[in-house]
Amino acid sequence: MKKLKDGNSRFVAGKSNHRDLVAQRKALVGGQKPFAIILTCSDSRVAPEHVFDAGLGELFVIRTAGNIADAIALGSMEYAAEHLGSTLLLVMGHESCGAVKAACMSESAPGNIGAVVKEMQEAVKLGGKAPEKVVPENVKCVLRAILGKSSILAHLESEGKLKIAGATYSLSTGEVSYL
Ligand SMILES: [Zn+2]
Image (cartoon, helix red, strand yellow):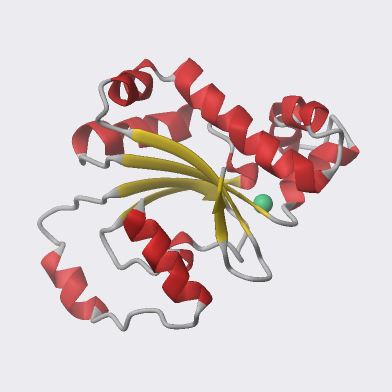
């Protein structure tokens, strides 16, 4: 967690580390050991490697609209926690999330977007349809869903091998606030 916080402080201050990505790329050919799993939104403004000033091989990232944990996302997280040794799982929502706004406006949407807004309705209810409140509520719902739907992740957490946390990201300041 400290590593993520320090990286975000550097990003906020515009003092991200210079990285030799060619050297990193070569050093990682044999394997990866990402210290953290990040589940966040696909929004193009919320790029975890930038936000946490991390290099190649450091973050195992899963991105879906509205940072929703479906079965494939859960399987991805389980793989990282069990087989790659990641010890932190962070679910990060963000300010002005289009998925949250859409879910606040309607319980349904055309095509497969419908699955996204449907999944967020519990958070919409808890946040009183106010997007700024629904964003953190959605993160909490996703955290509960992770523990409820993944016995592997729940078990790792109860054994103290995995820390699971939630956060929100500010588009304007670049700051990550932990819930
Ligand atoms: Zn979003």
